[in-house]
Amino acid sequence: MENADEDLKLLITEICYLAKSLNLFYHLELAVELLHEWEISDSFNLRRSAEREMWLQGERAFRKVIYIYIFFCLLTVFLAIGSTTLSGTPTLLYQFWLPAKWREYNIWPAFFYESLSLNFNCMCNVVLDSFQCYLLYHLSLYTRLIGMRMERLGYEKTNVETTSSLENIIDMHQRLKAMTRCCEKILSVPLLTQITLSAFTICFSIYSLRSLSFIEHPMSLLSAVMYLLCMSIQIFMPCYFANNLTAESQNLSSHLYNCNWVDLSVYNRRQIFLYMEYLKLPLVVYAGNYFKVGLLVFTKIMNNAYSLVALLNNINNDDQ
Image (cartoon, rainbow, N blue to C red; front, side, top):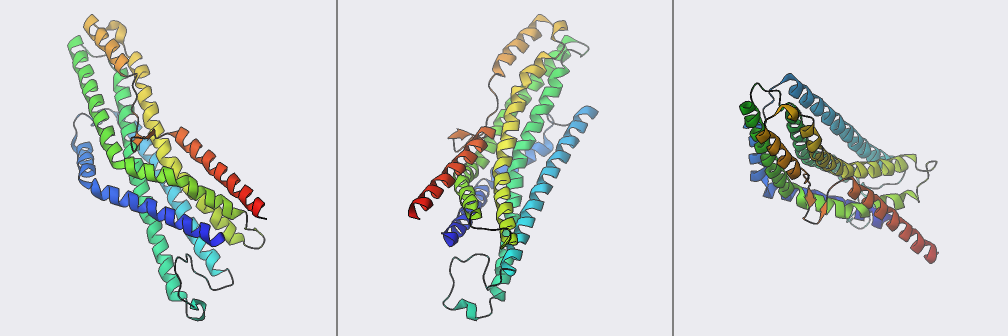
């Protein structure tokens, strides 16, 4: 069972990696068009110092999260290589297929190759995960930008300028919804694959911890714990950023209400009232048109993983 769960963890990780890679290649043109629009769009240009400060703070916060994720992933790879090297018996990082009597030969070329491939695979996964999360976080920053411009409504010199500003905000929001649907096309299949299979990966990781002792195998235990932590972060990040996008879109009604609507004309107040009714539908990202991506999905994944671990423990106890 020990070798089986290790092989299954690696197999599921590779399936998720292939799903993300092939899906991004398939939607590459759509992703390039979306990024190009973000670069040249006049509506979403930062016009005030407060908007630029908000954007810079958001970018710094996102970079910190990604740097922490990269550090944990590289530490996991380092611990995996170290635990295998210090195990005391000739072994490899992963053992899908091995020739007969392979321990009698020099295993270091194969070990070196697997170490390089593991590092390469790790960084590719980090880049793909970071890109997916950046798309979601970029949309949430745009939503926050729209909210800041909503609160400035009513402070223009004339009602005509207020009407023009309100129409620009509505156009921005409509375009933001279209961008969200484009991101959903890019992220739908990878998120569905990753969220669906992640419960099994976490389950096998927790189950493998039962057979490890910190006194006998400290590096192996730390490696397994770090792998479990990285997998949890990998699932948590898209759920968090998608939930952040939904939360920011839900706050747009409050931002619009905080504008100086009392001094506006009857026409503009009527438009704001109708627009607030429209804002009751928040921006939501779906995984495979099947379920909403958010923190609730993450909690369900962890609960399902715990249930699977409990089931495996019961089966193991019955066999004994």
